[in-house]
Image (cartoon, rainbow, N blue to C red; front, side):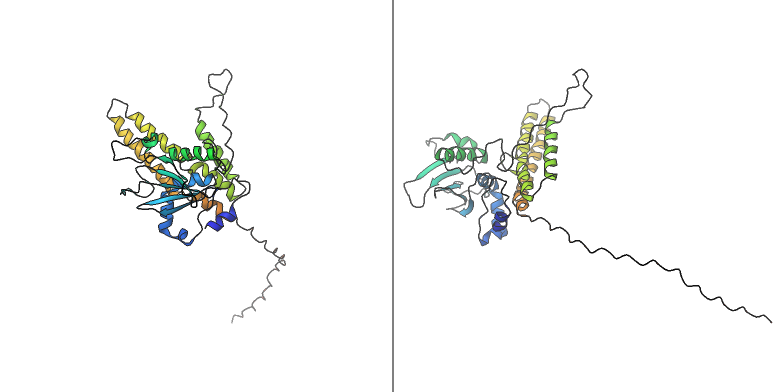
Length: 307
């Protein structure tokens, strides 16, 4: 799977770090672990950083290789162990270490809760298990160290240039402007993305557009989940009881959208690894058929003699 992905990477797209290349990658249990950590590994791989999943002291961790041979360990709290599922901890701890330099040990991020009431609370502790602040903190520190192969700005994709904004149609209040109906800027932007997908010249180009939708922190599905969650919070501000009922429906929608992103997390990699269909062989032309001859005239039956 990793080899196919590497071979299919289009030179016109910014390189995404390959998947690990060993036997377990094809095992269902490993793929499930990878799926549960995709919101961590995908944005880091988009920055050119190879990632792997390992088992730490009591929980699974993400190991990130850096260009200077040091590495990051991104893990949930290890001691005491937690009952929370892999990839969804109470908080994240990110450290930088070096296999040959034991003096290099740096905590980049720590949002894990502490049971010690006297312990100093780090600023990021308020983020808990959220992935986006973790990725932003890693971005900032690695950029300071010059260890980010290709930075990704929040408004940019690692593969394609951002789509041009859809021009606003003339307002119906403008004298002489035709009646264009309601304005749907965001729907138009997605329609433009769909048009670009239909016109994609390679599977790598199509994968780059899928990245715009499926990237787990800044992609459309992630932001759509945030939108419905915010809409639910807004509904709670109403005086009517219906506001809470609506908030539950919107929260369910947000959860379903996020679940969809988890289900489709490998779609981008699969799309990039696809091989175009070979053109169908041309069949030899059918030889002209000889004109059909009229049926032979049957001899008429001899007349019957009557007595």
